[in-house]
Length: 168
Image (cartoon, rainbow, N blue to C red; front, side, top):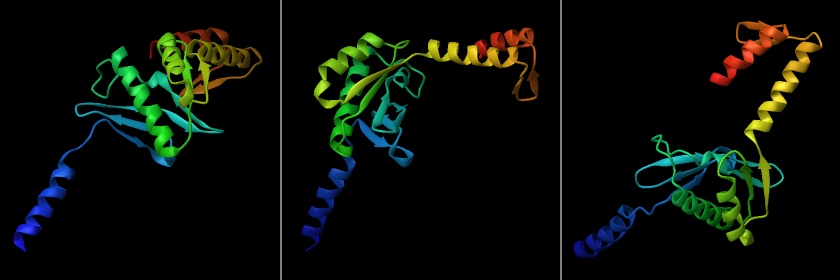
């Protein structure tokens, strides 16, 4: 009897000790993704609004601050796409930030086009320009901007504020 128990104990313990990597998991509310290897990990932004969107611009640095190589990005992309297709039973929409590895992500989307719904594009530079224009327009119309303890009411103050904000 003891040998049978020992056999089952070894059998199940051996399986539990063999952790397969990468480990991919969905975050809070089933949105953000965590991608973990044996030695490092990273978070990938994902939202679910009219379909799952995966934001590939997060795949730049590991949690340890090391850069993610292009070959690792390709593996991560494939793993994430397969995980979402299998685990959630839905094809994702890939969001490519044109300021970060646009060509790489487009090539990977083409390679795995049967496993994704579509591609959407965004740009940090375009978003910054929109915010800049909106804030400056607000100041010019007589409004103000409050940032912490600072109130910005003139165009000159705004231009100084924007310069300091860009340095952050």
